[in-house]
Every structure is written in structure tokens, then in C-alpha cells.
Image (cartoon, rainbow, N blue to C red; front, side, top):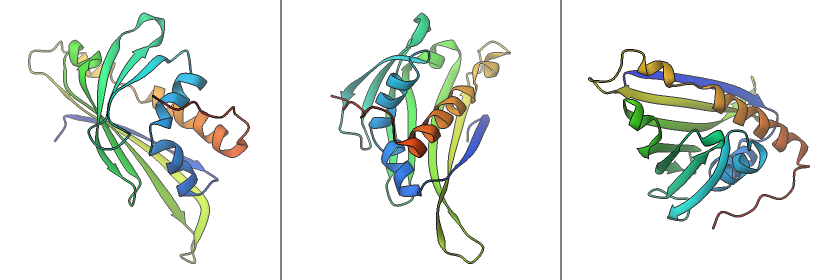
Length: 168
């Protein structure tokens, strides 16, 4: 079990399947690269096709570093994807685990009928190395994922953004 955990939830007035189309694929990385260039400069597919075992190399904007992340869980039925940093990034700054879980939760109405509404839930699990600096856990922030969820919400509601480029 991780030492720390932070999470964020955002309600979006689209179906869970529409939100999962973005979050459950490689397209989320390209979407962030395109829509939030102040956050992500470049995303490269190193291995895989978007399923478990896929590895991405992520270059952050403003020269703030590079990390490699691996998809450790992709469950299309439950709409859950987990991505773990395997090299670089916060691992070099004292964390032994940095895992992000995206869940798209279908909101059910009081009469138990499905609605065109879902919740985008993002959770970060992290663990700090024993020999790390005392304030290492303060480096973990849910804020970038809040921004991603807000921009994704706008995109999903408007459907006016340019078509997303495919990650190759």
C-alpha cells in the first residue's frame, strides 16, 4: 500500500463511454500534448498499442524533466486505467512509487437508470523512499490532473476541438 494518496473528481455531462473513449486510450496523452502545451511538450510511444504494458516517454514543458510511464491496468469494462512511472521524473526526486489511476464512473440516477453523466476520478498513489528528503511528498500534486480533467470536460462537451492526432 502506498504511503500517500491524493484524488480529484469532476462531473461531466457526457456518457461514461464518451469520456472513456478519450481516457481509456493513447489519445489522452496526445490530447494533453495538444491542448496543454504548458504542461506536456512531447509524448512518444516507446512500446505497445495502448493496452497493458504500453510505455510512453513524456517530456514536460519548460524543461521540467522527462519520465517513462507504463500502463499497468486497462480495464475497458470497469473503465479504469492505471499508469505507473517506471523511470525518471519524481522517481529521481525521492519517490519509489508514482501511480496514476483514471476511473470513469457512470452516474446513475435515483431511479437507477443510466444518464448521460459521468465522473472523471483521478487518483495518485505514491510512496516515498526511506532516505528521501523530509518534504519529498510535497512534490506530489493533483493540480495538473485537475487541469487535464477540466480541459477534457470542455472538449467532450463542445466536440469543437481539432481531431486528435494519433500517437505513433
